[in-house]
Amino acid sequence: MTTFEHAQPDTPLFTTNTGRAFSPSYLSQYVSAQISSTVRLKLSDPSLNITPHVFRHAFAIISKLNDVDIYTIMRSLGHEKIETTMIYLEKIFEKERHAIHAWKSDQFGEYI
Image (cartoon, rainbow, N blue to C red; front, side, top):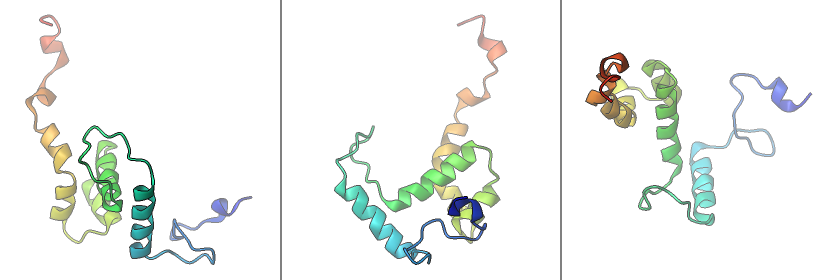
């Protein structure tokens, strides 16, 4: 069995060689350095700056798209206020408010 099979729910995801958790600050600096050292990614928006914080937003958005409760997302991100989590999810809420999402396919099928 590998060590992954013995991991406890509260075990850190990223650890040092002694098994201790990396500090969020160190991990953020490490990820930033790795991103900076790679060849520039081909992104739809070339001005987009990828940082470790972008991963937090991606986590929130992907969780919401997978129907995870917003309060669960809030707790997972360590937010104290739901308003902070709502900011992370504003892109999703904006798309959901678009009129096309209210369409019923059986209503327009014969016209298109």
